[in-house]
Length: 327
Ligand code: GFB
Image (cartoon, rainbow, N blue to C red):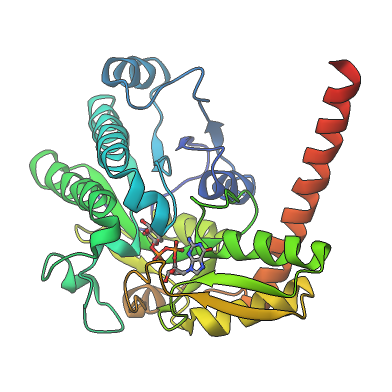
């Protein structure tokens, strides 16, 4: 039955989506716990395939599950790939939650996103505002899939008495992010764009939207620490927000990225690109009352994220050079 504190030590823990930015941060954080880590790459397990997921769970019987697998992307990806975002995220979510129940997992944590809340929810956004108003159109398919996951975890908790919980992270960034120029989230997009502008000595950099929207940014290793903390100390039906409790305008954020990268040119705004939700600052009162706070400042987090980007770039260049030699 659900209880806290939940003991992780010695348990088999499945991190679904372990190669993603969140999943790889969870692996780094869980390495500090005495757990037996289970992972499954896409080639081994297609999480959209219901029968394959049922078979994998029956064979591996993880005691603890982190659902960090999802099809994710920034505002442009969400808006362009609406069918893929709702189908793949519904399939991944429902397959894993049901298979975890069928194979008697002791605890499951479903990771959602702050875009599940109404577009114009009162700020900071309380968990209680879920389903109290219309969603942000640009990411409604993704948000619906994530809300379905929250409600499915709640429903299984109610009908079957399983200890399944949901957490709602704010916007995330850090090592392992996706730097695709069109489909990335804003942090990765601007790190790459300012970096390339610095190298090419471009006179200006274009930032999407008006620069007026406000966003809260949580460093992904802080998120992983919060998830492990909540796996041990949170056991309840509703979602719990994970954030820093502070937000910044996109214009101020872009200036921060320029400082981190060392770009000194102009910043221009392309208002033909969507702003999305005007603001989505999470109310992290529940989390802080449980005893957890984020510890990485935006400036420190951006420095770490840019360092990881540069390491990756170097890695990609080395690999590309190696490919040239072998091909
Ligand atoms: O991170 P982002 O794509 O997603 O965009 P959301 C945040 C804000 O950054 C928007 C602005 O106001 C964008 O207009 N922005 C400025 C940019 N320049 C860029 C750029 O080059 N690329 C991007 N991507 N944005 C996402 C949801 O919403 O939040 C996801 O779509 C998820 O589903 C994620 O929930 C946490 O914060 O607007």
